[in-house]
Length: 83
Image 1 (cartoon, one colour):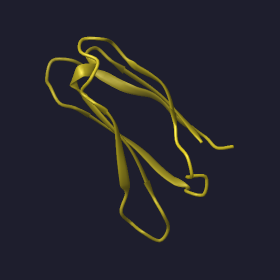
Image 2 (tube, one colour; image 1 turned 120 degrees about the vertical axis):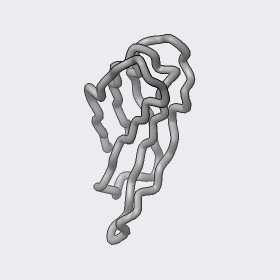
Image 3 (cartoon, rainbow, N blue to C red; image 1 turned 90 degrees about the horizontal axis):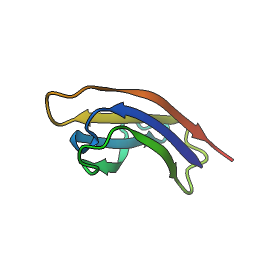
């Protein structure tokens, strides 16, 4: 399984990002932090995340936190490819 993300932001060193999933019938998400304020003053996080052994999960979420003021951004794309 491959996850594609495209997050536009003017200072990616401010961001924390998690990929979350849950199994039925649980109402609680399990999260994996894949971005932890690295990247400094670079712009945008764009790329693939490869995930193994999750083909049967159907409930996903992307959570992004901006940990500093003064910059702005948006989640432009979040896609999951299973196969």
